[in-house]
Image 1 (cartoon, rainbow, N blue to C red):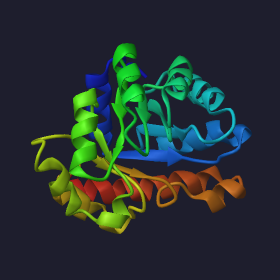
Image 2: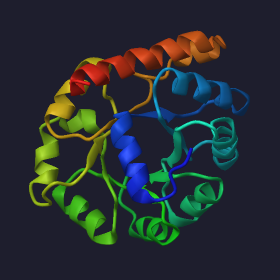
Image 3: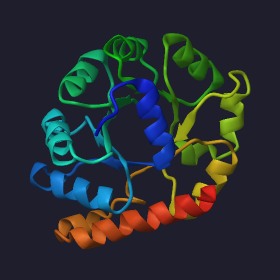
Length: 219
């Protein structure tokens, strides 16, 4: 992992096209799961901060994938102190389900990409004025692909990453609507395979989602 500034990390997220959201995975499994998802073709990994020892998990993945081009970040970051904790652990991007101005401003000071969650144009403007690098449209499945235009309308060519309820078979609609990448959890991460400790299936599930994204983008 070589990215150190928000612009480089943003480029890696866009190149990847998909961010794997790793939520509620036991600490003893998080590293092999992250490795399997990466080997399935996902270069961007998001560990949610709503679980226990999220910072330790981020640091462990960071060490495991240190010799790769993966980018590891934190999701479900609700406030600035949590953002500081995951940044200290090595998070290269910080994702929130909402727009918290203090969190965005802290990321700016630390030189870490911030992706606050937005639903309305008003929230999008607030996030951008605070200095957000990209916008997370959440929950995307509630409003659908057409809502990306409602967000980009007043802001112009802003980067939007829809997340929440996106399946492999509807990723194309979100890219057609202007998404630069998509975030995916259970549609990409096979939790039954994790429960069975079957990393081959975890890898295959990730690869299938990546194939769908590549087809959607015409890669």
